[in-house]
Image (cartoon, rainbow over all chains, first blue to last red; front, side):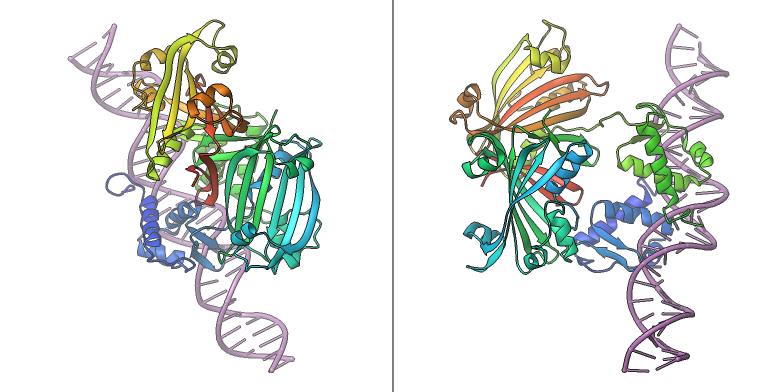
Length: 251
Length: 251
DNA sequence: TCAACAGAGAGTTCTATAACAGTCTCCCTA
DNA sequence: TAGGGAGACTGTTATAGAACTCTCTGTTGA
């Protein structure tokens, strides 16, 4: 009686059915699914079994469950808390490295054209420019320039970014980060970043460009980071849920 | 009665306890944990509850569950099927790119010291050296040198690698790939690879070093790839299953 | 000697029931 | 009119019991 006909588990079949309905638009993004008890009844299944199906959908980030409120279809791209450079710092700290952040510049000024395009600013509109240098093991390793859109920028510009991460400050200011996209390319160290990183221009580096969006798809932060190749590397390892990407210090 | 004292769920407390015992070495890697029913009894908890704890550990890749056999402490790194350069080719093909592979060299010869160390070869032992150039859009983009350990190498050396991927050939030869670890670093194009890639030496590139292991932790393949920075980039995006890493052609 | 069978023991899935903990609304009170 | 609390939701975590599949092993039979 347990597996239906072939030998697919009930909860997997239910998860697949719900996933199809979500993807087909039968349940719209942001909308609440029927309550768990109702769903379990309509599928003729126990609450526990239905919850196993929901857990799978939750693992796939298709739904979001909120205690006391309901189960909601996730927006096209889903909320998460940390950006990858934040997790870089976390990873290194876990490995016992001493990671420090120095603020090399902080000013509200007119954004250059490329940044304005990324943040969808009107021509001439100003934004907060935050320039930081991350160092670990006593040596500078990452040079990072972030542009933050107003009016969000006005709420966080007085924070101490040597202690607080940009994303923590955003969260404190009530800004919910929805998603981020990042592109990493190899490149050569340019002279201006070279001054901060104490390496000769032309050294191999990783160039990261990241744009972070809020829930309503507004770009809030544009990040351009230069990561020293001599200090950093990307390690990838295949695990069950796919590819895991971690940053690590070069040994 | 539900949450213990404060308000931590039982299954979380159990998961934390088991995780601590695994990390402390109380349960050694590869060793089987006590049966679920035994564990549930010793924690004074239901099978369902204990299984929730195990599921969490499984999500964290700390244990591996095998139906009919037992629950085992995971080795430091875990199993997977595909290598990331394989998925590179797949990704590009899905994007409609024409990906071609040319074999620039194939010979059984004595492995250099660094490779011998990676594959744990005895001094003077020979291996299959496979040199390939991947090109898409009609331009060479990746230069790749793979060393395959014997005796596996003898079983695949006559395959046509312009059509068959190395990993497909390995699978056909009955070699089960267990895991692979890869390190990607930025670098500068060296002269020998520059000849194959038709780019000036010193251009920014990604250097990938990957070692692939079989189930019994024997290293079988050592890969060193040079990926042109002008042609390739790494895009990361927080999406459904967490961090997804994809390779893409530079537009 | 070797192959096939049966059973024990492992993980897996499901049913049925109950209680716990947030969240929201509405009605009653001050 | 404002405040507070009860109750009806929501998801969450737990109980107990049973049937199922897969793997291994020991025994039986040819």
